[in-house]
Image 1 (tube, rainbow, N blue to C red):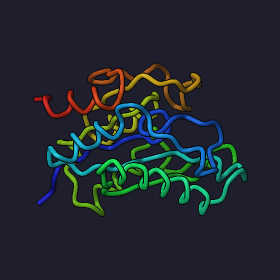
Image 2 (cartoon, rainbow, N blue to C red):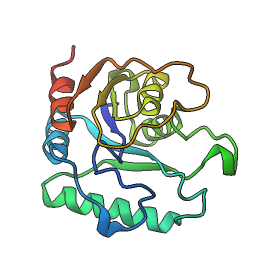
Image 3 (tube, helix red, strand yellow):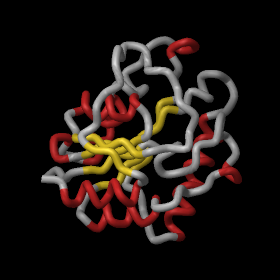
Image 4 (cartoon, rainbow, N blue to C red):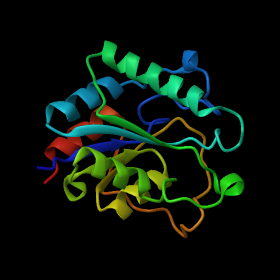
Length: 184
């Protein structure tokens, strides 16, 4: 039996955006992140982080360093009583590695998580702070919520002609979680 998921972008959604993040000591949870994730988990949803990490393709970090950053995020969340069901990452960048099916806005990370964890994409939601997050969720068949972010703006990802419109917008992850559990 499959269950719904809350897919979440990492940087700017769960943790503070830090340009070229490869140092676990620089990881900070965003206000409302732990409370929002707790609320999502309590609603019976799998809580899964899906993150683009092009710093690997650019040679600015190793996959091991990204795992250390993710482990630090998981440790901070665990201290707040939150356990993630999964963390999926795309280490690619089209300029360095060519196209792939896992780099958001492609839905590959969500599809992989759904297969491996037995998730119902149509009953799931993707929450993120960027156009690529919203589009990845839309392409996977999920509802979408865009959270406001302190991250600097970025151009639209290749292949997107216009900003995708999310199903809802929230101030932070805590507000997004409340929207998710009350969505029909």
